[in-house]
Image 1 (cartoon, rainbow, N blue to C red):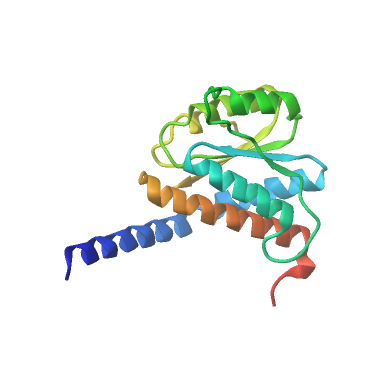
Image 2 (tube, helix red, strand yellow):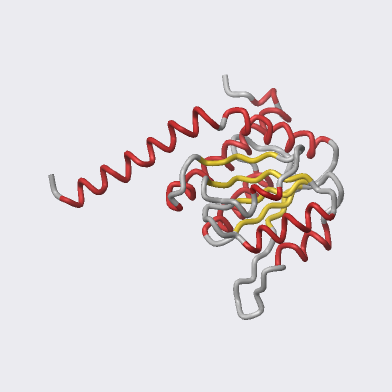
Length: 193
């Protein structure tokens, strides 16, 4: 076998192993997170989401599918991806300032982290806690900044890997799952037969 083919097979194997571990470990936290998001939306509260680096794109994807629908046509859910200006004026409080401006008690912030260091996201969580917001955090095994800020009513979905590429793949899969679960809880008549 060509060396690159061996490397490709290894990458697929790593992804499959992470999938299997996630399927075993993440059912309960995914359920809790979906229930929290549903309760938040049904009570008229809002959801904000943010992430750094590659996770920022996944945050924007989550906001988009929660607004437009994933599985079927439906009214938009009030979900906003916080803006990250990574230009010259960027600073660690960029997400925190947005939450301080618009976040209300019992709103939810969904934070996404594929890497071990997420200072902007950690600052956002501190702002959310100061506003009595609830938190759903999708993290990976090497993430300690975010996990240490969560309270008993918050939910952590910890992807079982420290590999940034595998964690990024699972961030996308996890937000798609959350959207699907929320849609089908709020609109059960749309369940696929």
